[in-house]
Length: 68
Image 1 (cartoon, rainbow, N blue to C red):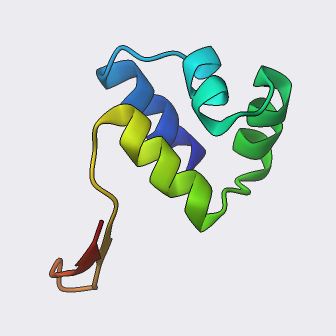
Image 2: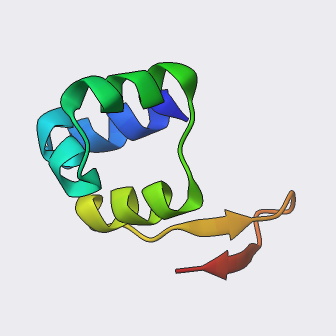
């Protein structure tokens, strides 16, 4: 997950510091979450919002099951 988040940040020209602020955590805490790949569902919703993206669950046939 961390490589996807970092890639999306790069594509959207957003910073890790800005994402940490959006999550209301320190940059070090964000680095730990990225290293451990330990994001909650709430974190993922905030990340999607920060990036201007939608969060979606996609099944093994690439059909969207649920999106936010």
